[in-house]
Image 1: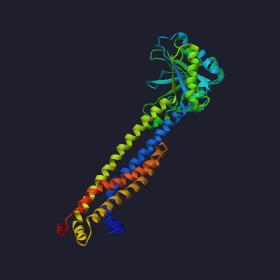
Image 2: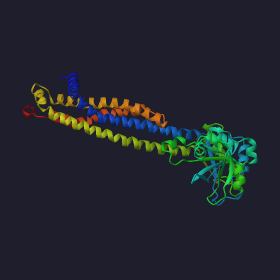
Image 3: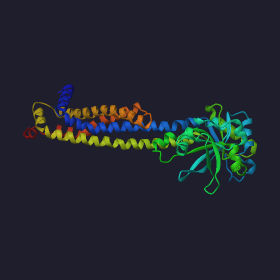
Image 4: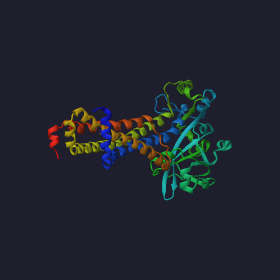
Length: 407
């Protein structure tokens, strides 16, 4: 019996048991579609969440100072004069203080923690936000230290029902639970930079962000006591980031006369770490979805073993008229591979469709990988071979005389 005859025989047998064949393929279809859907949505969410973070950190780095260093002196604090030294060097695109702290606000009956950033015109260029309502700070507002604030859209919605209603309203917050709150006027509402992540996480915990002018922050919280948390710098040419980090370190070492006093770190490190966490999580979810493929493979083996028992007499007759063990083995393997192969193709179609459908409702564009789709199809065919071998070998090894006696 040649290959084509074995193939025709396998197809005819599967057609003769359409319901059984469909139910057998169902496990593979569910497994493949689950893997592709979860992988595409996972990668789409990962790209959606970390894309802006990576872009935001590209070509930017921060400088901090080790206050516990035995060579540290208070005159080396990160203060305006240090920023002016870096700016006056003309070597960098933008230089700004990098100050972020937490404050407390009352949201209805509960008190929440909010991140507040002391911003400057340079900082707004380095870490720009997308204003939805209102505006950013004006030059004279930076200089005078006006008690004004811009807030994220999710906080605006929580406090005032919508972002447009928030503009022009007053908001109060304090540095600690015990401090008296200070009142600021809201002049703008910007998009929460973690909004996509919040959607993926279910929106139960919402990171909130405020920005106030640096001079305003200084007036209220007195920066002279401890200086800036760090300084943030943007390179003129992002690709020269490594050289610019060394240059900034050299400029500060010349200023202080001390080596290894300042710590320098790229802004993209945090985004890369977060991306790695999400990638691991995505792999885990895809692996869990892939377990259904294994279950589907066991279903294929089970049905093929039942088929061997039902067709024992047929196998005996075929062997009696000259079919070899190899012929029987190939036909049963073909049936198994056809089942899983078709199931794999259908699973890919359903998986892609589901990914687009789910992505539409959760607002996450799915990201498909040709490699993952090819791998899914390859795995489904491989499962057909692996789980079809045992039934096929059992059929091939049947004694013709015993098979002919079977009822």
